[in-house]
Image (tube, rainbow, N blue to C red; front, side):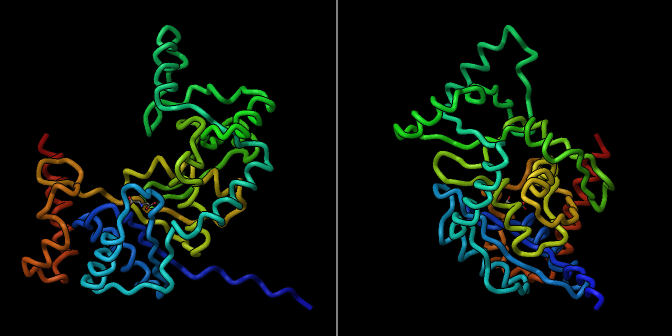
Length: 302
Ligand code: GLU
């Protein structure tokens, strides 16, 4: 009997906001972008609430997200995935990485790291900057197993970091495909030994987003191009965790009229303010495109 060919996964996009503020025009553009692609391909569109940052995320912002997206006319698959409810899934992924021998506990405080970096001033080759700021100088990487075990047993708070060198050796050379930029070579080492489980919450953005895109069957990740560098890490984690690899489409980030990225203080750009001002939701796509065109003209003029 012939084995049946595995059917290709159904085309799926996602919108993955963090409920740490009200959605603005940039979010509307992202959400509509993903939704329209899914519709055009008769694919799936999923929603994920990225609420691992317990200090900044609030239930009222999650309610506002749902309201705003419904106002925009979007429909998404149920159930909505909420990251704060998935810590056991992330713990399993961490266990897999631990078994590969590429995770280590890091007991450093921010000031330990800053002091080490300041000391390394005399040895500037040790002072690397990555897309997220200074690269971790490796203080806890070389602790003995005994010291690690003792400090953990004593209840010292610790994060879990990826041993980037070991991880890249395990994964081998990797590439990923961006729909507008083409084939990209994965260079996760620009970040150094990133945190995959924080001291305050036993996961991190990078781990949660990678595990969840796979869990939700996302085949095309669409998001702002501020997150383009993060994709290097996500591609590595996919390889290490043996997850399906999607494509990516990193979109232009909408800015305010002064050229800064849209933020909560740009009140006029929030979807709630627009709704209250009587804006027709049908106009938001065109408004986003006009804003992007304005940005492009402003840049050309420099
Ligand atoms: N939750 C992230 C944000 O709101 C987006 C994550 C992603 O698209 O990968 O900025």
